[in-house]
Length: 498
Image 1 (spheres, rainbow, N blue to C red):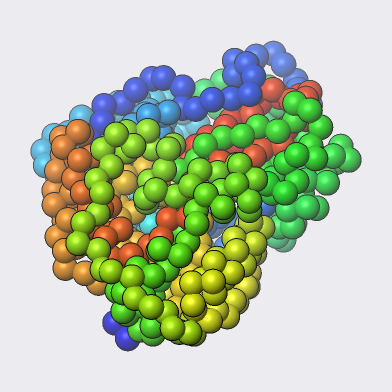
Image 2: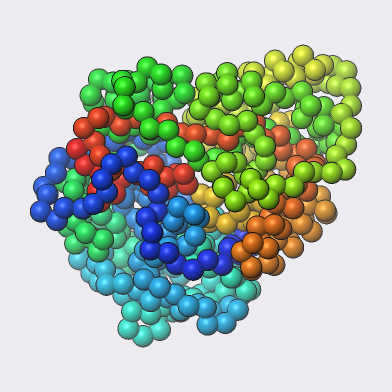
């Protein structure tokens, strides 16, 4: 089997820093320095899997709870926006100078150029590199008062966008221990400090009064990690929590009036077909799957209208993509399945996925396939998928979570050296299209090249886009200022209160 390597993530869009708000909230987001505020009670869907390491999937938990932040963030249009860095300039094709704002770590030490450089150096040297730095050779050094110079081995016109990744949070010096251990407890820069954790079940956060962005209105957060969607939603109904993320669509209608918040996201649920081995090496059988799938039935039935039918890698939340979409050409003709046996797999952390997979099973069987379905918890199935042990995999993928760069997701997920290539696709025309997109810096031309590359991917039928998800967040009527983030990086901020 071809080994799966991580490749250099593509340079993202070269966008100027914007000062506009990052995304919508469900109420006034202004901060009141004198407010003492009640504590917020929050239920999250995914428990920490890596002891709150800032480099893996737990980085998003820390970001959503307002604990960590990096040099930049994302604004509502997907542009790099100021965070710990007030501004930046590109000095050369491989060098950027970032100007830091005055800020303090939660342990009382100052955010200095040397501290920022050390944090990024630790991230770059991590045993398992953050996704945003996969294959990227990055060097960060202090460059005088409030300045950090970051250079890359290869030109990277979208370094500011890359640095918005939750996996590149800046932590204080004492966070970094021996053997690569990193402890975010009381060492980050966000409005809430992580003070105590209870295994994978709960975490306690207190307000960080010296936050550079203003004192948070809530005095702290009591977070629970409840993987079961029904139990998580029931916690809101019974008044046990104030905010619940990822309410299952089957539960959304049962929420009290005014407590459901729906947000279009950059998350696409797709069926990834194993192109390397098994029946779906045959492009004709992949085309037969694509022809058999009724995406509208999935959006209306399984997702009960809380999703849009799949049209590509990028859905409606990526607003610019819709007018630039290119139709694939040269697709294979659908072959007769003639009883071909296939194994589809998915995971149950997102409750809609097993149901979607069951509907797909029925649709494919009607088309003439014989289908076996495997459902496990995500951490117990990912390695088998990447090893090619299934013929198809139903997965929900946030296309802009790791770097905010659409080209990066195409490089990671669909090229020969892609580090998260669930379809095990290795197609020269796809690689050429992605490589061309990687080399374009102009915003509009890069977007055009991105959609041309998307069309090349869809033309292989390695991915059958199923739905573009809208997430439902449960919020009690007494709570204001919850952050409704299409990138799923944020949930609570300085203005979130009850």
